[in-house]
Image (cartoon, rainbow, N blue to C red; front, side, top):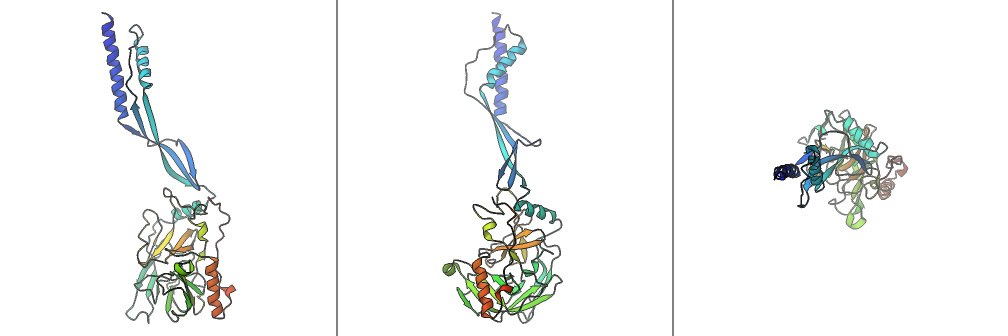
Length: 358
């Protein structure tokens, strides 16, 4: 009879332990601080591994025989806890969080430069861009926004704010890639050809001092995917652009966001700034707080630019082809048709060979 109270006490203790373990199994504990559990890399991206939610799940029912009542209470309690722990599964979920890029990577260069130069900046390129009543006989009225993300970056003046065949303001824009050549989309430009359908049409650029530079088109080469497997238009200007207009230097598309190997890699869970203009006169950086719709009808051919330190580097157009040997050959052909020396008007390639591919 003396064993009955001890047995009841043991069963009560067992029930209390079971209740506590079951309650814990129905809850999670979030880790909010502390050192990482480890590190993981994916290309140039370095992730911190943190414990997220910890879940405790009871195992299948088991037969239980209370420890002898003759044992000290502390030992009996430890034995009960040990028995229960053998039938509980603890699972810790690991969260993978972006921490940094590998120091030698191009991603690291672009990212650290971006975060160092965004304070007080916004996405508006021009503080004013309007067509006067007599446009296109009269030049557009344009002024730079000194708080723009691209302000004072090399190559910003290569962005034409307006040209005569743009349709609505900013649509199908032209971008200077040499002092004599402009780039635009190839599709919806009248078919694959070498011709002079755009001869005499005006194109405007803006110096950093807010002075309008006007030029006209002499000839064009249009390349379409259906015929040439490429999508762009190259126009030849009637004269060299002045030194106050800086053409964009270029990088191979095979080294930017290319799969499987690339110098500049895209990761959905890591910051990958990319500057992309659009027809309303803004530039998206593809980052929270600096992101907008850049895929509207009319945005095709707008430049996609890698934001290097102090410089915008062209690597493709929106839904259109990037720089290539074939594009340079088309530029050379336009020069030859006008009796110009092609060697004076070559694409200027940015050297990315010092950065590893991933």
